[in-house]
Length: 342
Image 1 (cartoon, one colour):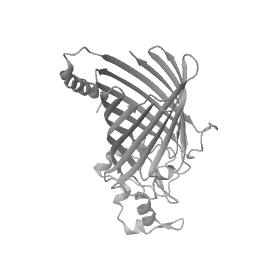
Image 2 (tube, rainbow, N blue to C red):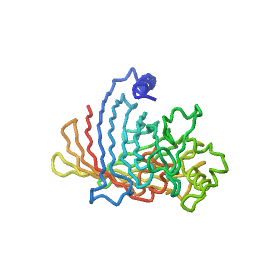
Image 3 (tube, helix red, strand yellow):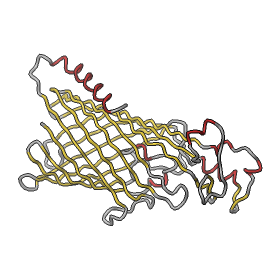
Image 4 (cartoon, rainbow, N blue to C red):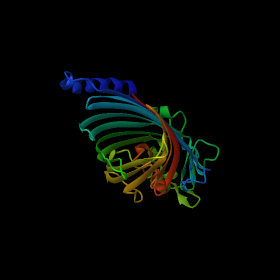
């Protein structure tokens, strides 16, 4: 769903929800937010990250409005991960776009309900070569065996060995309670379910020749290493990740216009129809901390995020069988956010 379609959809939903209160005096609020988060592998103050992670960048924006007790927020973000490996394919960089729609209902002055939908879709990845154990197959200079096919279904590969695509859709519900407390500003609890759909295409899976499959290369039977590696590609059968989300937020002033803030997010994960290669994490934690400068309706934040198990539970598109082994690692990033409310 494109961002313009989301905007039209959210507008009509808000119009419908606002009908019961049209006779009341309107309380109208607008908000707009821009955020950028970055990571570089040579930042020594961040935790040890997976060796393949070289850099990342996430740009996002959100806009929304509230009419009395009803609100809508729409947003779009782009995640770019620079991932470099020592084996083929050496460049496995990922670019993914996400759109989301949030619907709010405030049923007490300090308590509100949020229903949200988000879709994240990755650009198709194409690799000319792929390492199967110690054997390199494909159409590059280092390949041990050249692989190609004249079947029309592989035309979209354009000479590459393999193409991968990914799409995730998330539905969720959160309830947030704002608190009048010196040790906690707000607390939220929610449920979410993400459907993962991955697909890949390669002529390797059509190899049936006993002569080729029985070849011994570097001490390995080619048929065995092909089967083992294909089993580690993202499963083509759709699967779901259910999660419980808990968040606690607090802040305290640092002078007249500045404040220090922090938020702790906990996610508890349950996999459905997912065929794991190794035991994936069942939880993740994210610590967000920073400094905020307020200028009346405008604010700017400088912050850092620290994740205990990489991005699982926060960026759905990044997790599958091919990337499982990265998710026992920490992950960190720095960011800046601009916020306007009026």
